Length: 373
Image (cartoon, rainbow, N blue to C red; front, side):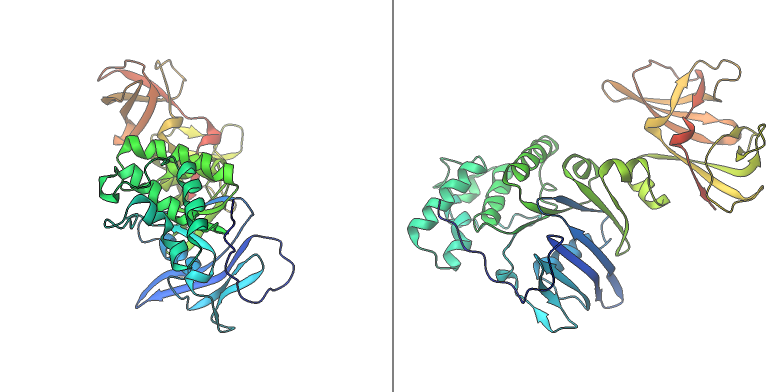
């Protein structure tokens, strides 16, 4: 196979210990601080996800890495070579960064065939026609579009157009693949299938990838590491398991699952230790943040998937009553009324509980987080 030589980058710096470094990245649009002192490293071959709600700065961060926006401050290095640094006066244009990018809209040109769409980056670089045909043919086979080279782009399904956009990003052998919410325009069934295909392809090619999404399911399925962003900053970084099971803030916990909140205060438990006390006087043995004294108000937070339901035997769990039931196919979602008009949502495998059924509600203490109010 003919290899396309990657474009040269800027001057090499010290010994490379990470594939890419982002340091102190900052970007403001008018009065909006879109990216606020963002720093992270990407390891070779890693699938790293920037996860967060709309407006959190994740897409702007990706565009700064791609060179589609210029930062106000900060530096970006790829393989030890500076590609962006306002302080040093360095800015390598997008076409010379050896990166491939797939946009949310796909940006597939309707007046071109599948072959012409995928070949476009090589045509711009004036690569020999034989090399173009060889490389495009190989990429089309890789992305599952072999035999569709001459098909007009408008004749393709949404999933196939997404593959064309991916093929165009891969055809130049990029050092880094950037994905900006590439599945958001697909229906649920196609989206699930493309997630699986993307993960398999990325690992087979060993391609370093940065993925932007607001969908926690996509992030959990695909990522080696997740960077949860909020208000232009990285709120927490870690493996999918780390950020899900050990959220560093109330925002991270709330974004990564359906959360119940109960008002409580710090109280002295029967064994003399400090825990939480609910409004109805129920004590909860839960780990507390440092520095909280008796009487301090706290909010107990736990995921609806961690709620366990049983018969309301005396002394077993918090007493509650089933208020609503929603059957979701193989599982049920319950809304439970607790003492003091508190409500708890529970997601369980089908238990066939009916409205008005009294239950005992239990949440394993290690699944409960206490946030100071």
